[in-house]
Length: 120
Image (cartoon, rainbow, N blue to C red; front, side):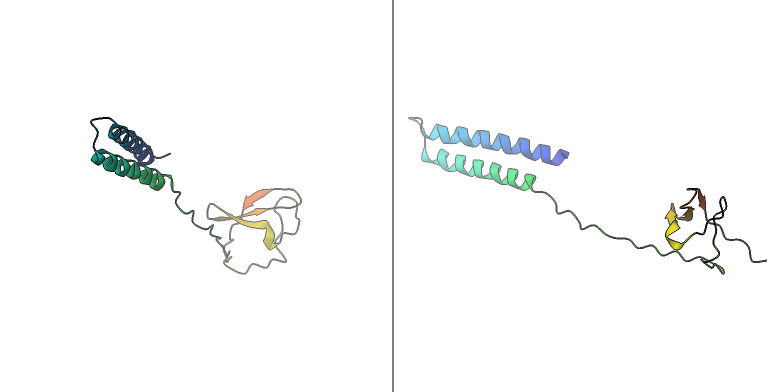
């Protein structure tokens, strides 16, 4: 709970408390009808503050992020093989981790970063 909500609830409780005191004082032999009006308005303000503080902010809709991997150079997915066991890798085995393409071998479960070999 945020500090603003806590302060709003405390202020609302104080307003409602004093509003009820004003309403009770109306029924005192020395009470006036004006106390009733002030008490009802004070209680109403306290309840409105509770209502406003208790409202939940709308949760933004979940966003889906699509990340396309554009491999530089002439990379043929048919010839991409695991460095450890030589198993054939497919596009489903490549994921982006911290901004770098990482390959996970489905056969030996080796994980390594995909690097581009120089063309010369």
